Image (tube, rainbow, N blue to C red; front, side, top):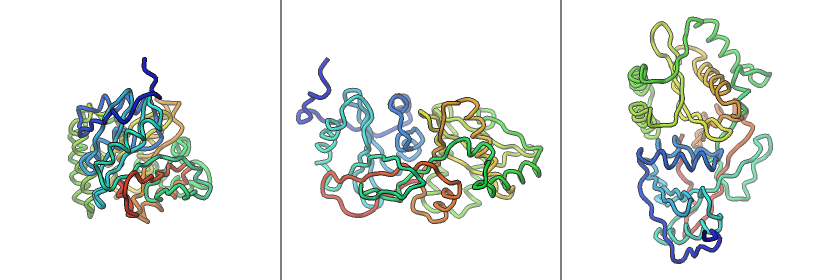
Length: 315
């Protein structure tokens, strides 16, 4: 077998093609075989945003390459490759491909301790950071720091004690789609939130094709909230969480009940990744209020002539 370090990148090229639902098994093979704590390397992080970012992928010598396009700046974005090839070999292949795009950059995930100041010397864009929490914190929101969240959860438990929890399945998919339609109509939607709602509905209509797991809360015969995500390595990625805020504590209940399900089924899961804040102050405050333990920052490396504009991100 040829040594992967000896591959001559000058005579090789990456053959990119658009990401589609048919590619879920292939992508999931790489995501689970080479697990990352970044949502960029999850099925939800790619498939639910493939149209927005025009995601494409290439497979070469047991290595997965992902690229997309920033919808605001038009810059081509390459993501850190996953697979068998040494990073330097993969980067040479990416740099060669990037010559076709006047403005391109590469994002490399960097974990950091959330309790310490963020080192931005690596040209990390703070808008791109992802928030990770120990799963134990979300089981019952124990501890002084989580007192407000626990109060909301306890209110829900005490006032809606007849609520039931059920797994997302073909039995309730149609109800979830209808709930999402009402949820979308009841919220003033930005383009991004409208896109996210439409993609959530698309996923629900073909839920069995995705490696997702989720729960719904039913009260008096009606669904009042649901959430779903996926497990990769020691992380559970919370991709979607929607609740009827007329019921105080519904979001804390969703987070707690889902965490309990994950903890019971996957005792090796250490963290919940609740993804990015997209630079929104209220969203950032919400994520920080749960006191993240780890942050996944994104080092931005220019591959050609790139501008200082920020990369657009998803919720």
